Structures are given as C-alpha cells and as structure tokens.
Length: 456
Image (cartoon, rainbow, N blue to C red; front, side, top):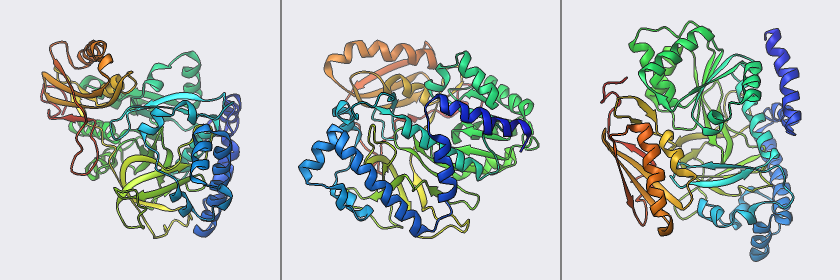
C-alpha cells in the first residue's frame, strides 16, 4: 500500500462518502467481517436482514402494503428464505405500471436510473442512498480480494451516459484524486484502440475495469500490433455487465499478464456476485437473496439451471423484491476453498452485448445504440438488428401515438453513430420473439468487425 493510496482510502474516500450521505464505510466494515462467517451463519444473518427488509417495505411502500394485505403475508411469520415464494415474481412491466406506488414516501434521496436490461425491455427505476452505499461497499470488498483498493491507479473502459455525460469539474477532480481514468467503450475505432493502449502503457494502472467485450477487443488489437501490456504492473482486470466468454478471458489474461476477475450485477439488480482468487462467483448474500426459477416460477435446487431472481435487502426505498433479471444461471451447493461462507453462483449466462460496425469500419459498443432507445417514452421493448454495413433494422413494441415522433428521434442519432449513408428501418411489432434459450438479445450484428476496413 503506497502512502498516497492509504491517504485516499482512509481520508478522501470517507469524506467523499460522508458528503454524499452514504453509509458505505460502516457497511464495508460489516462485510469484511461477515464474509468469513460459516455458510450457516451467513444464512442466519441473511434471514434477519430479510425479515427487517420485508417489515420495512410492508409498512412503508404502497405497492407492497397492498400486496401483503391482499396475500395475508406477514413478515413476522417468515422463518426461511423459502417463505419468499408466497410472493409473486417482480418483472419490468410491473415496475413500469406501478413506479410511483413502489416509492417509499419521504424517500428524498431517490435518484432516477434506467436500463435496457438483458431482456431488451427499457426500465426506469430509482435508487436510494442505502442501496448505493451497499453496492459501493460490496464492490470495494470484492476489489480487495485481489490486492487492490480505492486510490490505486485504475483505468475504466465503460459506456454509460451517466459516467460519460457528467464530466464536470467536480467529477474530474474526484477522479484525479482517486486516480481513476475513464475511457469510452462506445467508440472502439482503430484510432481509439491505439490511444487506449498507449494510455494504459503510460498510466501503468494497477487495475482495469470494464466490459469483457471491449477489453477483449483492446487486447486483440494490442496483440495484433505487437504492443506489450503485460509488463506494466496491472494486478487484475475486473469485467462485468456482460457474459465473460472463455476466449475473452484467455486473451485478456494473456495480453495484460494478470487474472480477469468476473463480476455479475447491474444497476437494477445490484452488485450481486464477484469472483474470488479461487474462481468462485461469491454472492453478496448478507443483503442479496438469489433464487433460481424455472419458466413457471418454481424455485429450483442448486445445480439446476433457470432464471436468476434477486431480492436486494438494501432497496427498501424502491424495492427489488423477487426481481426477474432475465439471466440464466445455476447455484452451487459446494463451498469455496477460499474459506468464505458466501454462497456461490456456479454459472451465469446472458448479458451479452454485441458490437456494431459503422459504415467507415469503426467498431462501436452495442450500448451506443441501446441508450438511444431504452429511455425513450412509449418504447416497451426493442431489438436492434444490423443486417449489413448499410442497413440496420430496429424492431420496436411501442404505443401507436408515439410512432411519428419516434422515427426521427431514432434515425438521427443512429446515423450519427453508424454513418449518414446507413439506412435505418423501423419495424413496429406486437412482440419481440424470444430465442431458443428463452432470452431476448437486444443487439444482433450480422456484420463482422473489420468489414468496413477498420480494426478486427
């Protein structure tokens, strides 16, 4: 631990969180202790937190006040996580239809967020300070498993408009103090890939963080150009927001000369699980309940594959209670040799985001197009299909009254990203058909990277 890193972690970071009214430090101290409890003790702690959460939402959140009364559901009678099965699963459509009723009255710290989700259905939701504090604390705990911490030099390859659109002076100053640098994953052109690689070489970060697809593409570029990135002192590459494929892990670890640590979660469902040095995806089970269900909603046993359903026990201001993620996964019944009592996700499928290729050959992250649609009024579901370099088709489930204004609102930014000569056709459909896996893909590109002469 360098002196500067120690000052950031023990002085600047606590001050930053206190100014934001976050309880991150207290939660982090609790999580550092509770991870070493036995599996039975973790389960007991989870149950205590679950009952407290259910009692809060049942008395303060209008949607759940009504639901609990209707079902005669009493949180005081909950004696196991299995009792959650008396409550219905929560999906995006239900949240959209009951957004105001799902807010706890007096929750003044709520901040508005949105996501396209792995199913391609746009969702607007709200997060409070309690939820944000937990996710920051859980992320920090997982980061420390790999010998790095807040204040260590970090480069983030990311693409959210929140991160990319809020680069005001205060945020820039904070990032400079915390030694975090953001690079845009939206535009993976050859020019930008060279700049990213050169920036990593000059900055010599101790950790990288970003989409596995973006970091794998960067690694492929560096290897093709003979640029060494494995001698810079990078300790770990954290990847999240998409499925990490084996071939991506291999090239990331080869080129950067360090392990790739997989994470699973999202803005909606929260910081769910992260990989330890033994390769296990540990669930943040003190405050997160994970269920695996089949197509009928029946809870499955460990080892059986089904949809991942999450209850976030720090979301009482805007509850995510038995929330359907749309992802497919499997729970493990085996403990991890690392000694932590936290349960393990044996596998996670989905959250795959494709790249698309602009007409000039530049490779763009699929999220560059998704963000155009996911917060657009009237859009219920969508899928983007890049048929050729010069034709991209958008399938939309939308209200009829919004369609005229919607056309230009989609075509203009799409052409700005893909090229002015690209035909953007819009198909209004009754539903988006599912794939054989039962999931929706929200971006499908039938154009190989490099087809227009850019990087491959």
